Image (cartoon, rainbow, N blue to C red):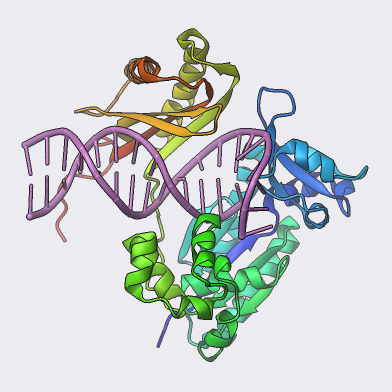
Length: 359
DNA sequence: TATCCTTGATAAT
DNA sequence: CCAGGCATTATCAAGGATA
């Protein structure tokens, strides 16, 4: 008896949320943008299918998207808190149908759909979930069902939007072998280019590379994963409460600069946000990093790990200030964007949990 | 030798 | 696919530091 895993993916999520509160957007191309303080600067976060027809895609600079747009196209600034609210409602409903859920992002989750009636039972459940999300919230999603995480993810991508795709054991090979290797989850443009140079186009091409070759090309974790994925294998378990290992916030500066006076206010602003966030999570942290993106778009980081947890905002401020000094003493290229990240989390003791627990 | 830390690379949206 | 010029968040891996 093997498991049955589903991947639920909310369709063009941010755009769909906006269409929900403003139905007059229906049928029009909609692009959700993340703007910066600078004129005309920013990128597309999500676009609906009408906008995708115009080749407006996520990650694309706003200016380019505007060139591709037509008179009908609507650009809306991202409203994360609103999307988060809807996301919470979604997964509340999903949890009425499925006990074991691993949420991977604001709009995606793996569901354990193992049951007595096999794939038929899972399909039935998925249909119910889709029905309820549509009925209760007016949202559509795409669901993929298969024997492991990776295949369910591939399946969910197969029929979008509003899809339901099932890959049973005996269909695995025919489903994946003709797919492009770049369609594998976690295999992005860089890896794709490398594979292309090796003459690898499809997943069956990928199968001709040995595990050793792949590890040499991509490192042990990625290499082994690609090796297994190309054979339909994925041993990753479904993890119910996946805990964040870091949180970071970034912003674009008003102008490129190497002047500490011009950078510090932004850092303080970010530190405060991050500090609030981490408190809300009831976590403590030891490592603080400053992330710098230059006007040449290189990313540089400076980190500092404290001996004990950082417990006040003042402490955090002084650490980031020092990191900035350190960076500016060696910097040559002006800074465009700046970010603050905290990591090396520890539980906030005193609240919950004892240090030792007997099994 | 094993683990931690820093930093850069990569991916997804 | 590639190039060009563009935001944010997160994870992973390599190699150095440290004990």
